[in-house]
Length: 260
Image 1: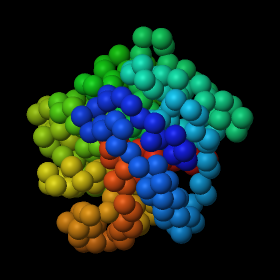
Image 2: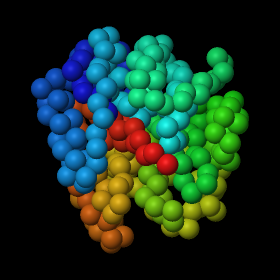
Image 3: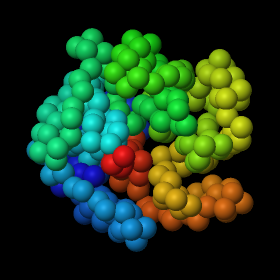
């Protein structure tokens, strides 16, 4: 995770959620600290990278690459405003003993923001920040079968805004975010596919993190909490209002490091 000491300097808009100049630094720091505490209460160790000036979106650690064991496939950002972030994360990964893989120069991919590993498959959201060329390159580098999901609504520019895998059988998703073909792929592949309501989708419910049988979710989504309860999961709600002003939330702020 990346402590949001310069997050309030955001002065650009690269997705429909962004509200430049509206972020309250004190509130953002408080929300971030509460999320860290929520993880620590679950026994999770949180590693922190220092945010660098002029990199406000650096706080969204999940976008920086896919980590498997002690290896990482480093992201390559599509937006010029975010390209400078990569060198800081590259240094952190190197300093912490990770082997780094790099994408070809003409391929763009934004890490776990645009992908989910589910069973033996890797979903990649295409249409806004990634494309078929991304799928081909990532599949080759990670030696995994790629399942592209076409995103058709710019508000769901990243896969983790419209899709939330809960476990090996269950995935939540917001149908209007995806093409008809991709909805069909999910319906055929996922044994227990659950639709988000519009309120849940716009409340960033997909941008949650599951750990064991706890789901860390955005505060203010009681219907999602009820759905999780029926599935045997305990909900931990954290307010992420300041980060939603940049189109991000809990999952965006979190890159999960699990050593195999």
